Length: 325
Ligand SMILES: Nc1ncnc2c1ncn2[C@@H]1O[C@H](COP(=O)(O)OP(=O)(O)OP(=O)(O)O)[C@@H](O)[C@H]1O
Ligand SMILES: O=P(O)(O)OC[C@H]1O[C@H](OP(=O)(O)OP(=O)(O)O)[C@H](O)[C@@H]1O
Ligand SMILES: [Mg+2]
Image (spheres, rainbow, N blue to C red):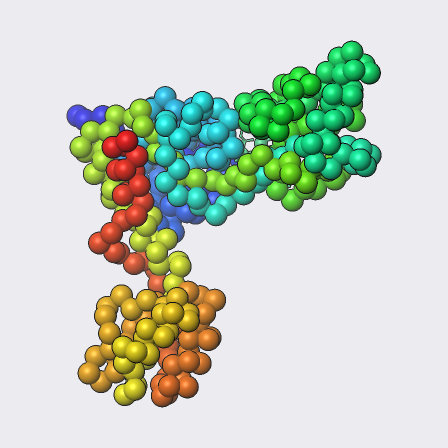
């Protein structure tokens, strides 16, 4: 039997539910044959796919090693744990969930410290005055080093923190922190503020491909089918389907609709009786239907799309381009 194609899915934490819902929306039904506690799964209808349920950070390291072909994890974990990440993994698609920023935060009481340049001044002053360097609590060691270096900040040292990082300044184990934040509530609760230019990374969950995985012809074909499902769903959710028929519907009108509302006509121009099917960005639906009625349409119907299967698959194209590099 040939080696299976391995897809890594978050097994816990805040990415888990969203990741499972994402595959379901794409028409890929994940199943755990051994019950909820099983850390191996399958996709209904795929014989040769193995789902590996792992934590978000394990998914990042497995992608780097090539132990999984595709996986879902946070960009923060990829950039932190994989040196030269863009050579080892391809971020195929941002998924619109798991959004969080990796930030530099200092005590709110430091009213004169608003920017990284201000931080540079105080770290230098601190070292001169106390004869030791300011401490930065974080688990994002590599991101912190690179970001501080790019701002010329050198008088600091990192105190590795595995959890409750925001508490470090109050408990006296560090002067400032680098951590991930979404709502900012944890920072505020701990009397901290983000520096104005202190956003290191805007992260979200991504669908990620590994270069080091075993990309046999069969694995590539499996990836193509999985990405085809995902692309069809992504394409469908960008548009609503708009249908109408009226005598004055012509190519000039469609060109105007395209330019004004971002509308596309996937099946070509209107029929001889003026029948047309359009795809329209959701935010432009009312404006488009007003435009069509002003030009003679009596009725305009709007429907949601589940899937749009195009010949082109931009996600698979990205994977192929990455593996060719
Ligand atoms: N507010 C947030 N705080 C932390 N992580 C977030 C947040 N929002 C989104 N994430 C994303 O979720 C990823 C995993 O964090 P989460 O806390 O959900 O998992 P976890 O089970 O704690 O993982 P691990 O055990 O590996 O730390 C983060 O690396 C980040 O990409
Ligand atoms: O900006 P906020 O919306 O307040 O979210 C940020 C907090 O959430 C995360 O912790 P998490 O809940 O994952 O706990 P953990 O550190 O144990 O993983 C993160 O480490 C912050 O502490
Ligand atoms: Mg966590």
